[in-house]
Length: 197
Image 1: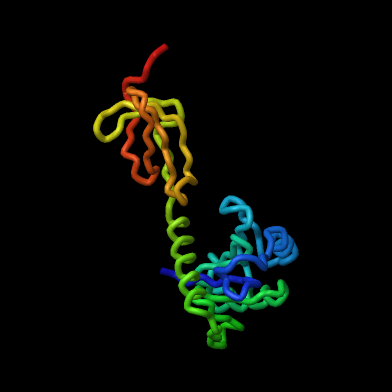
Image 2 (image 1 turned 90 degrees about the horizontal axis):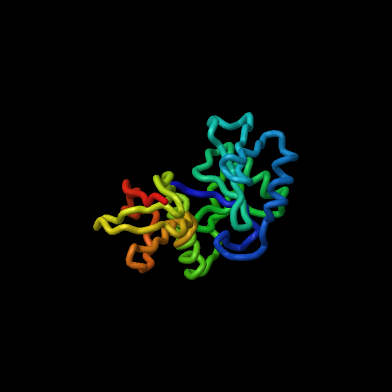
């Protein structure tokens, strides 16, 4: 499991409020020649091409009112600290520790047990959502499918974002009953015998 660093204005990055807006982040990226947006990875995803970087895969992204990077090297950590100063923010690790540069040990903040537990749960939730990817389905809404028991259904809706990113496929069986299947493990196959008009 990696370590995220967060550029945040919050006392603890897992709290709510004191947001860095997406507009602020995008304006910052436009004015920083070392950052380039990569919209194919998300509307706020940016690659860092700093001279100090030893890696060519250094990236930053914005989500939920803060900017973050996963497993940043020392050069990207220093870049994040400089950015945080310009944005009136700080750089925090997953456990709320404050980073003031790569050559200094992170400073441990005084956080309540509740704040530390909340941070852990939020990080675990974010990781599980990011890890769920849905391969393309071999069927769409309106198609006939069969479940693992061979029962025939008609797909009535597909929502890949439902159930915290696990996705939901809703069907109507030939007997009129409605069913729901998680996209992550639906077990549905296209029905080779489609109805013909």
